[in-house]
Structure formats: structure tokens, C-alpha cells
Amino acid sequence: MSLETTPTHAAIAEMPARPLVIEVEHLDGHYGPRQILFDVSLTIVQGEIMVIMGGSGSGKSTLLRYLVGLERPSTGTIRLLGHDIGRLGGTAMLNLRRKIGVAFQGGAMFSSMTVAENIKLPLRELATLNEKTMDIMARLKLEVVNLAGFGHLMPSELSGGMLKRAAVARAIVMDPKLLFFDEPSAGLDPVVSSALDDLILRLREAMDMTIVVVTHEVESALKIADRITILDKGRILTVDTVEGVRHSPDEHIQNLLNRRSEQQEMDAAAYLRRLSGEA
Image 1 (cartoon, rainbow, N blue to C red):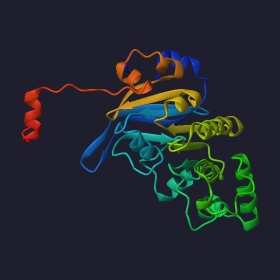
Image 2: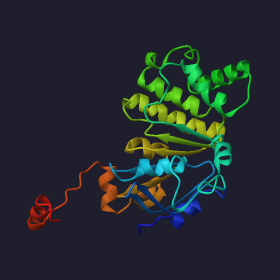
Image 3: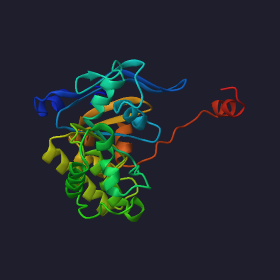
Image 4: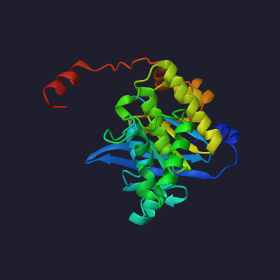
């Protein structure tokens, strides 16, 4: 397989003719003077589950920050639902965020609010609804994530898996067209993690959402993804179907899938120069 920054022809042929929901073109990403992402280009179609993977420090979390609009691109472009987010003003960006849901790693629930109040928060901030309507919408979304009857509890009273599902309920309370997950299975046991994977698949089928998942969990990625993007040192190594990734001849990809460490040999003289500060 050639290492491309766009889907292979085989992958494109297998995908239905659906509109593009996310378009990333030649994106460079920085934290201060340090460059994290290099010439990233990626497209995601409506109704697709795209999984973004990579080792620690590969840039996957940074890419997510750009995709959800927490960082604005200075080089390259990002279009969400047809809108160039680098050109949107405050009001236009707020309107776009009404169509986007984010389930943050760890849940990111407010500890001083009940689960139901957490779920209603986006409605309070972004919509104009009466209290009864918000209560109904919160209960509906708790039903979707199998947490009916738990809205009165505080986040501290939920298990790890329940907290993740409550975060999903909050992310989908406004019926977004585009849903982002940041490490949804992190810290969960295999059974709970598998149940969360099933929930992601059900959400796509029931609500026709486009879903982007950032994860390091290989088993989860292979289960839920339509396509997988693999990052390495801030560059896209490949974008392909699950089968394409499974059978990739690339050593970096196989090391990631099989959890093999990559030992780098270092020249002794170069090592001494680095220790002395000369490298």
C-alpha cells in the first residue's frame, strides 16, 4: 500500500456517494513555536465512522482540537458541514457548534450539577426552550444511552462506564449532525468498552450521524470504524478501510496494531553529542 494522505481508490469505491462533512486540506498545527501536525489532508463523508489512531505524541488529540474548532488553522483549511471554520466569525461559529457534539475524554461533567443538569447545559447555552421541554429532551437522551432514571444522580455517583454514557447523552442532546469522541474507551474494562462501542454503532444507525473517534484502543477501532486514519509524528501515514489497515505491509502500522514497540538504534557518537548538548 502506498502511504497516502487521502483514501485509496479501493476505499473510495466501497464508500457510498454521500456528501462530504469534513474536509481538511494541507493543515499544519502548532503549539506555540512547536509544529505538531504537518500537511494533514483528510475527507470524511456523511454517515461515516472515522477512527483516528496513532501512538503517543502522534498528533491525534491535536488534530481533534482543530476539527472541533478549539484551534483555528493558520496554515491550511478545515471545512465542517461546508463551512470554512478559519473564516467564521463568533456568531457563525456558534451556529455551527449547535450542529456538533463532543464527548470529551473522562466525561468532563460538572461535579456540582446533577447528570440531568449536565445534559441540559447545551440546551441552556445554545437554544431557547422552556424547562419542561429541556427535561423531556434530557430524559430522551438518557434513554438512548441506557441511563433512564439516573438523571437525578451526581456525576460522582456514576461508574466510569455510566459517566462516559452520560457524556454521550450530553453530546447528542441537540441532535448534532457531527459527533466527536475523545478516547471513549480509556480506563474502561473490556466488557464496558465493548458496550460503548455498540452504543456508537447504534447512534450512527439510529441518528445517521457522522462520527469521528480518537482512540488508541485497537480492538475498538477495528470494531466500529468504516475507515481508519493513522497518524505518525504529526503526519498521516494512511487512510484506509479496516481490512486495508489490517493487511497493510507498513511496519509502523503493524507495530501499532500488534502493540509492538519500535526500538530506534542510535549511533554511539550521535548519542554522546546529544548528551553533551552538541546535537
